[in-house]
Length: 46
Length: 309
Image 1: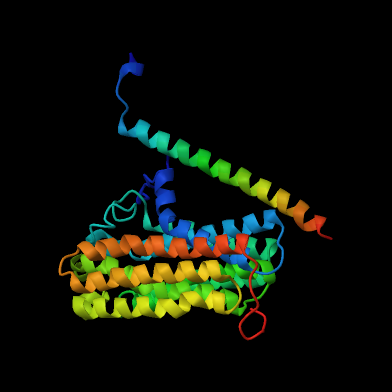
Image 2: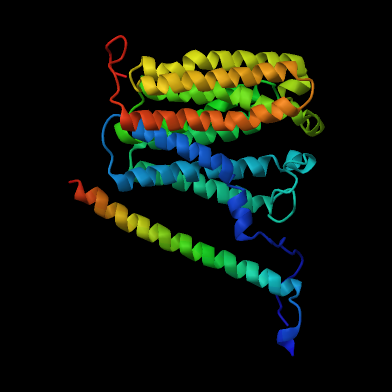
């Protein structure tokens, strides 16, 4: 079965890329949340 | 089959998320963040806790950006030194352009967010810190003079000023005292490391003081700097920024730091230098922890000459 075969370099590379993409997604979501909260805090002061 | 020309193949990156984190120099960042927090807490005035957290985040990201650009520029000498050979760039896990781009985006982003969210004085100081570390220390001084870490140390000493300016919008003598502590701590800290890594620095062509002036002169200068730290660490107390608890604790720590330098002077082996390097990290962390504790439990006294700190 293909599932029993050891991971090749291509699989490892795909995993690395997927992990990078997930990290980038989290950073982007974090930035959106940061600017959303910043807007409330800054506007709340006026 | 595709009809697209295939004359050039772009290099492929194998950098993992951990490599991106590693080029931010997280251990250096932790000390930078801590000293920035102390500057922010010690400053007179009030800053919304969320904005304070954003300011600290910007200081951390700015410090990380400096580290990434530094690793991009120093990738040739990092390859030569055992201590740095496993970093993502010399190890070939990350492309130079990736590190440079990552560093630049973080640098611009951290300064912009600091300016928009907190204030532009703090943002300008953050920009100055990054620029000083990258252009003055990394590109200009590091490979040219044994005074590289003395002058370049100013970049590492600026975070408390940024934290202070985030609250007050300006820089006061109290903040400059915090800057001075880190500035005068930096040479004995790095020279302790360079004493037992002198062969690696020499191989890489970095003119650290032990390489250029020898171990004896380096040890003498390290001792002098620990003596200078006595009045410098007393400055926050003299300025009325902190109380007697801090002053006594700082004097005790400075005494231990000087004793550690004396041991280095007397020891012909690397053992004392290694110990001093480790202790120097604890010394700075404890000095700033004392400032925090003192600030939390003791009401600061009036400055000795009655002016505002």
